[in-house]
Length: 394
Image 1 (spheres, rainbow, N blue to C red):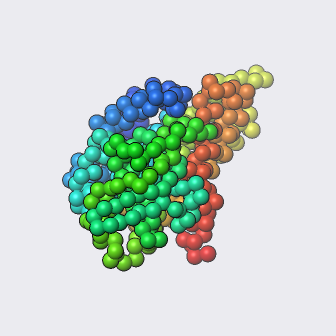
Image 2 (image 1 turned 135 degrees about the vertical axis):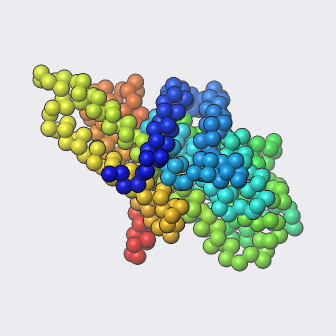
């Protein structure tokens, strides 16, 4: 009996997998190899255009704003399907979704009407810029500044490791207004000398996800640029501003963490299929290595623990809509467990493949690299443990 998915959702997952196999799998190797090149950026933009035109970038956006109106579980299932083929693209999807969800939950009606249809259709790709070189998980230490003078807003500072940084046309950026944290909406597509993109960071894994730093040098923003506020001047009288933005940051991280966990589940599904195939086809000492107890136990551990990771991730995705007070705890749990499980068992998949497993020509080598990055991006495993301990009252 399936604990979480009904027949409609099971069918949805199969449709997602079919689409990803048809449209993403053929180009995934080139997205990986050419990630840092202009050709790679162009190919990624073209693929995202396809995802947008088919409605996949607006799965969770309400129909009122041009989206599919799906549940968050539906987004997690799509991230799982992407993760089975290219977890880097799943991270791209996660960053875009986090920006959309932030605007949907906290934006003014003007901001929602302006941006959500564009994000849902993929005509605009989103990013969330919070981290700085010396302010990662400790986001309150960030030094980016917002200055407000009447309806004029000026943003200054550098954001680091921005997923979709040189791909997105819209970024939700955090900064300090009089030592209080605030989110603003920044049009990255607008030609401005005050916006400077750093070089794409060549990473160990998840390489197809564009990642760079962005410098904002006294960038002037529009009147509707402060997330959740009709006018910049409203910041002067806003109560509990820092706490509200902290809630926004937590919400964005929980969205991203759950979708990264879902992509880890997809990666594990790929690891299962590859490992079983290798165990059944590779012969040593007169029979398939899959008949050896050492290999059978690896496959049993992989199957059981990947199933557990999937259940934790679906629980988190369900809680976002149905039990939001539980979302932070479940998001931390699924991110920690799914990422660790992906790293451990992608390593075991490499072991099952033997010398072939360390070849760059074999997909299990990429799974191992991608899985390790999952333990770091969108909040390290250590931070997730701290959150879990806090959520249970420690």
